[in-house]
Amino acid sequence: MTNANHPATVSVIGMGNMGSALAEALLAAGFTVTVWNRTLPKAERIAAQGAILADSPAAAALNSESTIVCVTDHEAFMSIIHNDAVAASLEGKRLIQLTVVTAEQAQQTGNWADTRNIGYLEGSILGIPDNVKNATATLVCSGPQILFEAAKPQLSVFGNSQLVSEAIGSAYEFDKVYYSFAYATLLGFIQGAAMAEASGFSIDAYTSIVAERIPTVTENLTKSGKLMASHNHKDDQASLEVWADAYSKSVDLCRALKVDDSLPTALMQNFDKAIKRGYGDEGITAIIEVLLPQSGSTS
Image 1 (cartoon, rainbow, N blue to C red):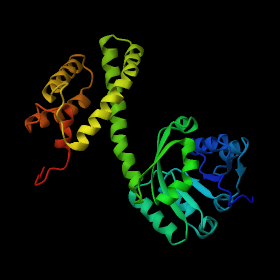
Image 2 (spheres, rainbow, N blue to C red):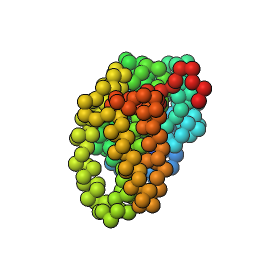
Image 3 (cartoon, helix red, strand yellow):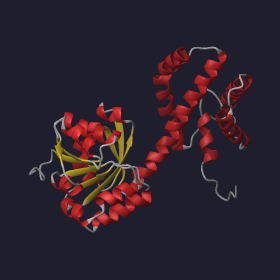
Image 4 (cartoon, helix red, strand yellow):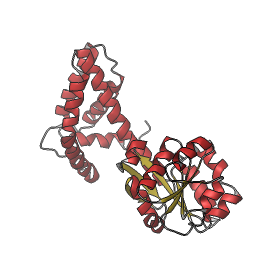
């Protein structure tokens, strides 16, 4: 194994569903890929597709300019990477952390890497393994700009990659910011499906109409983001009170259908708070003002 200084060499440590997808995508893009996994058969499956099979994490790191780690959790990462043998193999190279870790854990590894002359980049994958294979995932990263630019040709294989901050730990935080949207959206979709079925409608028909509306939703999200960024919530389409009245009727229907109303009831509270605070004549984006920390508030 003698390709360590070639920019098209990447090692992937961790051959779970996501790690395997990362390795397969890199292979398909023409990279020389070295793999290692604690459970040998998982790594052998990727080796059968053209990857080089390393016999240890240190050997994997030694063979490539960049090493991507995507394992179960921080404890697994520590047990595999934080040792002198791996550190020696990574010296002067790039370590890209794609394991789900907290900001504090990422900072711990960042400090460890700094003292060993290892370039450390933290990333979070917004998407599932199929998105990685199809280059439709989004990678949010944090770390030095120069390191991100050097790794971008590899990261772009998986989809769009963005550096959100040079501060280590920021990718983890941004990940959680994004998933507040993603989870709420998915749960809202599931809530609607439950209401559709309870009403006697086809979930397939419901899904089709929701999918048809996605381009318009995207357009509205872009507009709403600009309004919230400027904290200017004037909207000539509908006032918050109009939005609230429409949504309250959806809550009423949910209850009439005897579908669990926990989610819509919780969301309705945000409308009520914003109207109580005097935002009823502004647009729906004014709700952000009651979600943000309130100066002098003890609640």
